[in-house]
Length: 197
Length: 197
Ligand SMILES: [Zn+2]
Ligand SMILES: [Zn+2]
Image 1 (cartoon, rainbow over the protein chains, first blue to last red):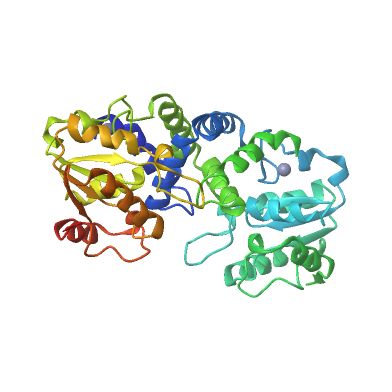
Image 2 (tube, helix red, strand yellow; image 1 turned 60 degrees about the vertical axis):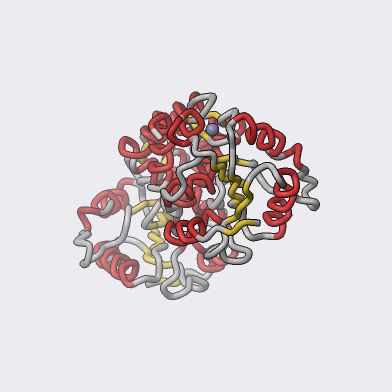
């Protein structure tokens, strides 16, 4: 099917997205072709724009369209509280709950002996720098309650001991559960009942 | 988060794809942003190309990049056999199995009393025209074994009675099962054991 090369290429690219396999990629592409003006064209345009503008905040690792993200530049968010998450998706989940008014630090993963991910592979050195430069008084470790998440929390707590108040999300985070799967209410409860390490 | 409007718009568009909800759309967008050159840029380009070139074959309803698709223009596929499917995804599934060498006719759905889909809403008039003009001797009804699929098959069989040999996929198509979910071997078996209606 030589004249359908582009369609085949599109299916192959779509199948690389998390959550889509070859079959759902084919369905998605047919859906896109049927909704050319309502979905296909706007999606192509928006992808192009995001490709040109999206970047990671140089300070916190959040995704935005400026070198330093809105949260890092907002004086209102300079509360002295810094919430450490592993992934941007977790930051977005926290923001949806609306419970936290401070700033974030996105590690970009968790420490993992198995995957050979050490502190230098994550945004940990930058985190240590931010404590004095942004007058941080409390670091909230909002990491998943997995083995790697707990290892990472303990490593960071060791590094920061005596410098700041260290807390972690507590009530409501299920053991082995990932933050991004939680509903807003659970995140709010976990934040309100946070415990000192 | 004003400067992330485009990212939010992208998440909203992605969430409209079948198989992706808001959460998986967010994951997909973060994945795209991380894989800017490997995935985001090629996807934007390919979507643009497909938006500009993809169209439905005026003869059979297949999706391609020409007014009449490769299968309809190929003399090799003029075997006198015409395989009727409800959806392009089903045509693709048949082609992957490689068992069928004739041409297709994509109805664009199935008759449905509930959804008020009658013969004129589907590509049925065009199907009737093709029988004499393409010297069709056998029509294989490869429709899903659902109530709407069976209703559609009976309607078409009534229209074509006496004009052509009418067969349907038989062995291997599970009751209530959809064609696009079947593996190649099952489709091959069903095609080989097709029965005369
Ligand atoms: Zn930032
Ligand atoms: Zn065609």
